[in-house]
Length: 339
Ligand code: TXA
Ligand code: MG
Image 1 (cartoon, rainbow, N blue to C red):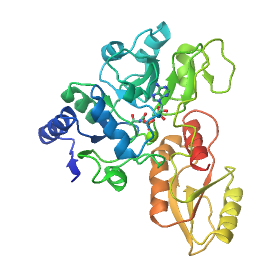
Image 2 (spheres, helix red, strand yellow):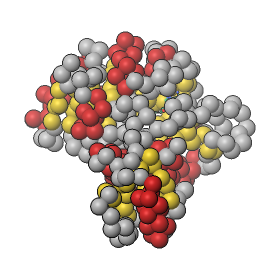
Image 3 (cartoon, helix red, strand yellow):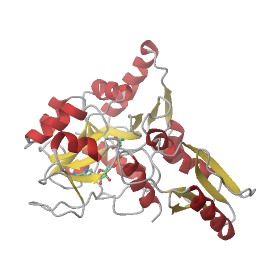
Image 4 (cartoon, rainbow, N blue to C red):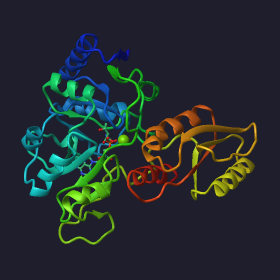
């Protein structure tokens, strides 16, 4: 199969026919990768089980790992889920469209293939104009995991998508780099209080400001113990090189690089702006961004991991972000990549 790259320009007259072309592919049961505000997704018609099955094949994703359904409006969330509480309504009003995914009891038309047999569905309204236009033109909810091979860093450019999936999908809508660079926050609304399954683009603190305390996995709850988000339990978001994490201190980072260089032939560094690295021809440096500027560091994280992997490094050294705000999502992805 030849994967078409449909290059968008941001000019409506040029882009509209390409969106229509992509929507026609979705409609016919095909696979289209598309940009969201977080990362590129690999989309199929969520109401077509055969099409959704093809996502699992293309990604080499195990069938037990359910997908996120992308819709265009709060009404569509109501159409495919039920039992939402006043908390759900508050979250929809505060954060949607945007990088928040809610796990809610599903209605029947959402197939077991999408939800991996669960009676809940993960659903969100993306903010990216291309994602919204695609959902609207397709006239159907779009099931989409991140558009990478299973276990790999999520794609933030169309090149990343093609690196992993060229020849396995019909098309990719190329709108350049995705603005956020880390995936959506996933919140399970079927427990009381709701459970944070994956930190992401909407910080936990922002959610708690709207609905009060949420629990993270491991905290005690009052009723209904949720399963951890499937697929988050294994090594994930990982490049081929070994990821080595260190405390976020310039001197410790320098020492960790020295250590790595004594053990591995080629070493990569995700370097915060202004931090020193050893002078060694076997070191490859990715200029990550200013430490503490989590928006920039989030946008560049997966790109950095993939870039250093392309340079054939055997290990990648990276300081570990703290457990706060958007940094929590970076920390989570790096801890999983380092397993
Ligand atoms: O930002 C994002 O969320 C991106 C873009 C494309 O929207 N999507 C994304 O999808 O990150 P994916 O498949 O890579 O991660 C979704 C995670 C899965 O690991 C799965 O475990 C969890 O969502 N999930 C999906 N349905 C669930 C459910 N019913 N209950 C619990 N977890 C669920
Ligand atoms: Mg993923």
